[in-house]
Image (cartoon, rainbow, N blue to C red; front, side, top):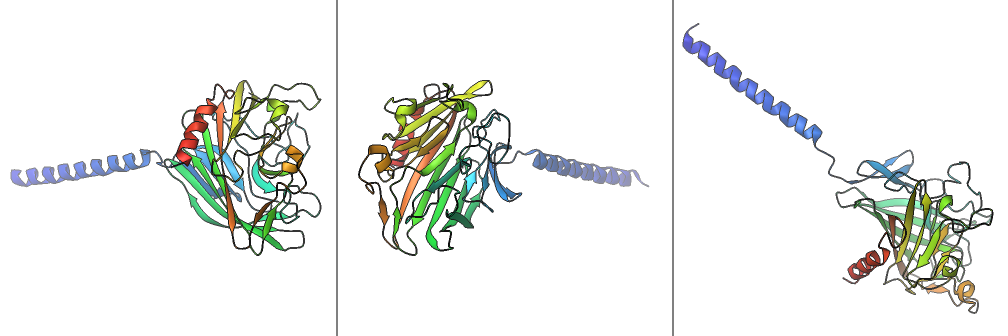
Length: 334
């Protein structure tokens, strides 16, 4: 072979080696590239799993349940912010109110039907479909359509609920929950009862009053500065419930959207860990005449409620809850 041929072969091998190296480096870069979806939603084991930066935040339960709910809710440090029973049985938890599943929306009187409890004769909120299920860099979105069915199988109402899981900032977690309730097939009356509505059952260690009746280490406060048992039934734009979880203090604030009917709402917030916002129960909360809190939705119309859950380390002061609500309020007006 002539020297020219040797040079030609060497050149071809050099070009081939360079191309191979380029392809390998490119492939490694593709595999090494992090998933751009910081908020990842996907179905697995009959739930929608929600991961933030690759770690479990919560799961949306929608199959074979009395109503859709989120469980568990985990802090940035992987601690349970919700009571684990009745989904799991662990030592040291009360087994009261078996219908308190994680985080949920339900109401105790819809055209006279109970959709809050799981007592005999209670209705169920039945999942129909997902209108959207999307992961993303800034947020993940779940939109579900549901049917309210009474114990006889009759449809009382329909709803569409949107859950937006925002990408985490440090140790904070944010969920925006909205529900549009449709008066189909006919007029819908959301009745005057304290049993409702946008709710979360918190970890037992966060209770204001312990199971044995002694003082717990939890703390409940609203925007006006009322504390613990004094919060129940009062009007406020936000409330915050905090307490020890493991070796840390964790807090959960619920923001009532300024565009909600009857804003600022009344609160069904209990010292044993039930934390709920309920704009309907004026008879119970204010000793008003029965039916004062009824909200009537004409046939074919709808009503929408929006809330933000702000999960944060520390109490309401450490979590800077008032500033977070003010920001939420400003954005809501745009």
